[in-house]
Image (cartoon, rainbow, N blue to C red; front, top):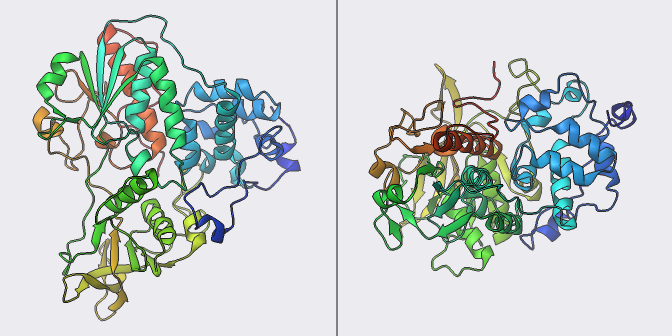
Length: 492
């Protein structure tokens, strides 16, 4: 145990300082000040609060099974190099989860029963950042080559995790990505101020050095330039792993939806991220000088908010159809569940208005066909449904509307349709306990099979799928499988 009295000496959470709002709105850099180096006193002190519980529920909260008490103890004792070894033992990409994961491990921290939880997420990202700075993150070469080949379609967190695990097992792995850059939603769905893309690049550099090969601009099962047929892919590889994510946006079919200026949130975020990367786009969606309304109160909506404010929006309003979540756990979300709580993200600190119980009933359209306003009514709950209350309509000025209502499954046109993969009632790819789809030799993991979920679940499923593929090719495997097919977070 790091410090037997650590949780008594330090009772509060301590996190990195955030840059002043007026300063960070002027650029796209990460919102936090540069993280501490050297002894990292604050991080070590927080790691010392870990009680090394007899039953560490943080392991349960994290689908990766991160060895949190172990690396907390190592950080407290100053053994940072061994800490990254224990962190990498279960997590391929802690620099991603340490920045973009909502930290269900902290929700299940035993200390969190009667004190603020240990800042597990910040300890995690501090370990990996220091490891990169010190040069401790090196390629891990396979002990031998198996002569077997695997194609991974999609380069999001699930695909990258599966690819790295299979490469380290000695297989020849090629990752195919339809976009011009690697990373999937890590690259184009998460704004730079939450995840600077240099973190993706340095991990890809390690993977290339290990032997993973990448092919961008390749639409597997498509028909355009750079496409590759499913038949060719299956003929060239011994196994195929589909990790294309859940990219179909949920739409809002209400009167006036045909107006211009109404866009799925991911279209907007993708273009903004491309521009930050240095791309020049014609007719790009921009919030500059506009009244922006974001429909959806989740993480994607917050990402749109921070992006719109940096682009110079005149006003930004975020609408959520449900009630404002509580600030503390309720009886129906007991510890160690990951509760739905009212949160103020870094983007919410920066500006904009938030409105709850807001049901969109239609759009107002100007003479030029562009959206000019959004009709909103107060939400009422009736027979388990959320419906607009008659007679409560108001109109919000809106010249740009972003629909951030989640996703409805993977894109079916192209790869999925051509392969003839079985889908469930929600449009997700069906697979068995060995992560194999209805097409023999074709496996799947991540959001395209699970539905929209967390980055930590994508990595966990990618690792488990890799173990199944290795077993399929070799008759057995030494690769870890942190989650079982169909496994879900604890709930009541």
